Length: 429
Image (cartoon, rainbow, N blue to C red; front, side, top):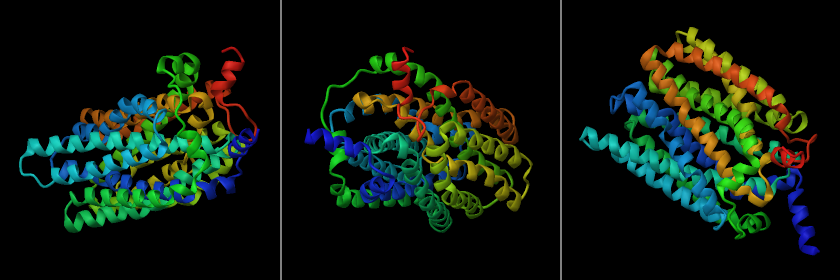
């Protein structure tokens, strides 16, 4: 009985207890890893255009390739995490990201064009593998230690605090690229990942209970079974999450190409992205609070509206000041939505198949992340950057309508104690 009581108390941690338990082994390494990701979010499109001379479509493929790899790895990683510890998953992911940084740096140093492009794509594949391991291990860990009533705030803090690190990373990456060359941004990315792994190694022992449950070996639940039981949630709320991630991923490429279109330097482009991250870092606590107190839908709808406003506003901006102002609505929405997709997945994930369900969720969202830059690049090559912005604004509005149609499936926050997937099962759906 004592063991059951211990498990129950671990599942019902308060926000402060969960944050104390997660701070050093999970949240702070996440900040450093966000810095690592943000360096390339800014610099990769510039590196592809200036160093390799790639077209917008090919640049979009390079940017989004990691998401395609994440989609391909989602199910195998979920199966792996059902058998190994989340800690090992984090270590394997970090190691792959460090290797990716080294390969990416090499692609900027070789003289042969075909070899440089090959190495760049190999680097993006390694990034996809590393992020798949890192993010799914981290999400499984967060889902196992946080109850639904506090998950929104903890996830928002986990994602939101990383925005502050991203502010620094965007500027560091831009300044390092201007001084030493665009390829140096890969080394900056790898350095942040190394620091994240070192901190995690030292602090992981501070998280004794949740890893013991998340890491416990159990029988793997096949993807077919997961889809049969929870397929309706994955097809409805999962598709909303996928589109949400597509818009986010498309924005990262869109804002860089808009800045390039108007002749802004690398440092000015980086400053716009850094300013957006600063705004995100200021508003994310409000997003976590609204998610838990008013529900996930009440948060998601205004965030998507703000995304749409930014895409439209940037099509009319012609100089640095207006481009900066146009990015503010998106930054507000993205900051409020910090951790939202992770929270939606955690709400729906059943305890008996958590990593397997989250791997299917990751598959859906990764496909969304892949399709965003890809679609954006194709529209830009066929038409223009402004046309791509207007298309993405329309996609945002359509995604809002889709979510409102299926809002009854979204559970979580203080008003709900059952996950969306469990509610469907109990209602016979």
